[in-house]
Amino acid sequence: MRIRKLLSSLSPVDLVSAVFLLFLTFLNILFCSRVPLWIELVLINVFVISVIFFIAWLSELRKNRILIGIHRWYCYLLVILVFKEIYQMIHRINPTDYDQLFISIDYWVFGVNPTQWIYQFSHPLVTEIFQTAYFSYYLIFILVGVEVYRRYPIDKFDHAAFLIVYGFYLSYLGYFLLPAVGPRFTLHNFAELDHDLPGIFLTPFFRSIINAGESIPSGSLNPIANVQRDVFPSGHAQMTLICTYLAFHYRLHSKWVVTVLASLLIIGTIYLRYHYVIDLAGGAIFFALTIWSGNMLESWWTRYSSSHKE
Image (cartoon, rainbow, N blue to C red; front, side):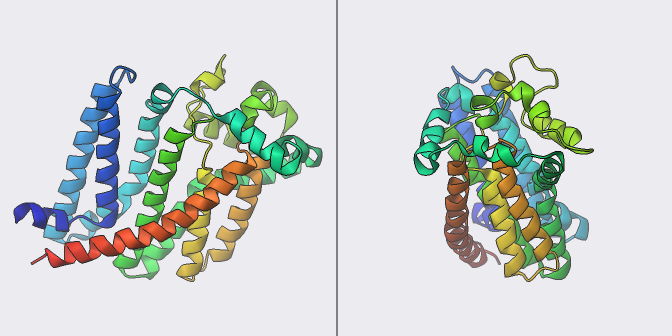
């Protein structure tokens, strides 16, 4: 009964995060001969799962505003932590890059390579706009989350946070199944990107931050060996579609800002050579899968946890 009561204190975000960390732990153990840091990763996962349970239990017990806030917002840091963990795993567990498959599909559909075709419209101002919108990806979640948190009851925020976090984890599964590096490495010369697509003021700064986030150190002699395999599905397309959906679902004041940024961002993934078009299609499919399965999973867990609370 105590175990059931402890489980009932978990929010849907807690549940899916703990389960995904357990899944990564299993993979690390299964492929321990390929993942050099598997012991460290397993220990970190066990620790983080313990922290999730502790925060959920303490937040439920004390009903403290600060604890409740921590319980609701820790997930945004967690998805970053998990993103860096899978970096240590994907290419070692599945060393095949599927870029040629994605290139072939795009060429079969369009008769051209879209990132090469769109280059004819390049201009420093256009690049600046798209690179800024692409960077806004890291801010859209906060924009949507803060407005829902301030305007709606906590269960509405829990729903939004769950769909976002759950969407991230689904996209990470795609990276394991079909790892790829993207057209800036395969169809173009990554070293010439600043020359081919120069911006005006902010582009170099935003581009360097994105590169660092994707584990490409500045001045790397072999960036393709370091970059994260996070192309299919396009998490940028999937997650911005989820945020746009939530913005309209909750009638947020920021819905049109989110829509404009999301539209520019999605086009920018091709213009800036981060993704193939098939990645965007994959992102749209994963978006639909997230909403469909996420709503069912959340409803089931809400019923289960409610039935086991005193």
